[in-house]
Image (cartoon, rainbow, N blue to C red; front, side, top):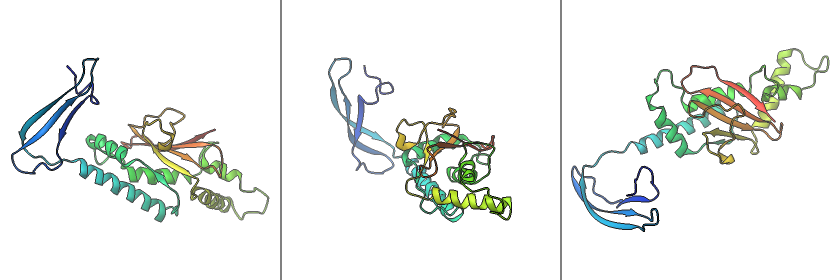
Length: 229
């Protein structure tokens, strides 16, 4: 027989979307098994009954959309990045939120908070030769007398970096393990996207580097950023 757990694409249980939402209801359904091991397929009409239960999927999906909206607002209002496109698959984020359900709420790092941490790290001076800020600083002239202080030069680097980040060509993407490059690039050091929020960043007008920001979902490790080309 076909096992629906092992062969989910071969076994389908079809129910009308118009099933009444009553305490106890009867409804027709169809069980379909497609060709399996060359034995052919079958379709069986069923008459079912059962209780209606509230699905939590829509609530979690709504939570994902709210998190994305909150993250975009932080990017715009806190960091001045109104044009930077945050790319995240809502369905994938919904799954991530479901999986994070067992995490201690006081310790868990939400998606929007992780985005805020990630963008903050992009603008921070790093002890990383291939971090975005390091590359931006290299573009700021060191000529004697050009800057009133080292802080002024750093401020110029932040402004320079912001100009390159806030462009349509820049890709800032949540990576969740998908092999589709449109959904992020795998981190060079192999960090686990299920225990970390992994953001891939590509700023083609600044460099041909790929960058990654890693934020531990449970907040046990300090967020960090690095690059590679």
